Image (cartoon, rainbow, N blue to C red; front, top):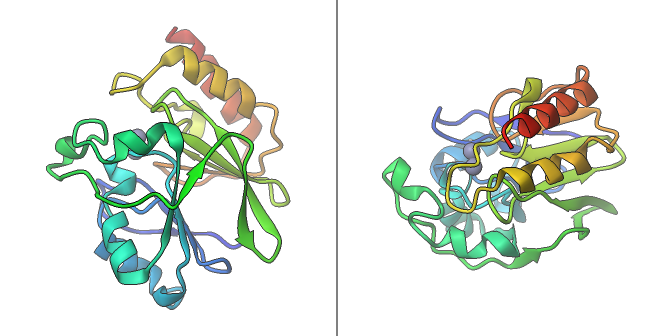
Length: 212
Ligand SMILES: [Zn+2]
Ligand SMILES: [Zn+2]
């Protein structure tokens, strides 16, 4: 699966572009930056869908511009919908912004198969812990896991001290990830990795357990 990590501001969460499907995983903190970066790889009019891994502003702040300028649909887990429109819950205030006011077109649930096009799907894995409605997106054929802020490379995990954070939920969520065959990890911050990914996920689980 062709995936581009878009280079945007240092404050932004990672934005991944799947140009073959017109899909973005996360919007980034600035829609104009995301659109400029995406336009290097495709006609932005052909963007169809933005899947938000969770509601936090560093991942969602750009969604308003993407909806207005590209007409994308927005997908987010139901348990993060209330956070998205809340200045504190979305941590927009931490970034000096205000919560994005957008309609969530596709309300995700655990186990959903989200169509990408050409018969490809994301398997939606509900991974609460960092936020109540965080998800990981798994593309089984390529072994690609988009992990949002649930886990990062080298055994890192998302913080659990923000509104809706829950370390025990995070442990249970990562326990579900260790069973997957992951060839490439695409985290919400830091670089993607295809080296010893299973070991990295096990490290993340051990780290999360150490915080309980
Ligand atoms: Zn983040
Ligand atoms: Zn986050």
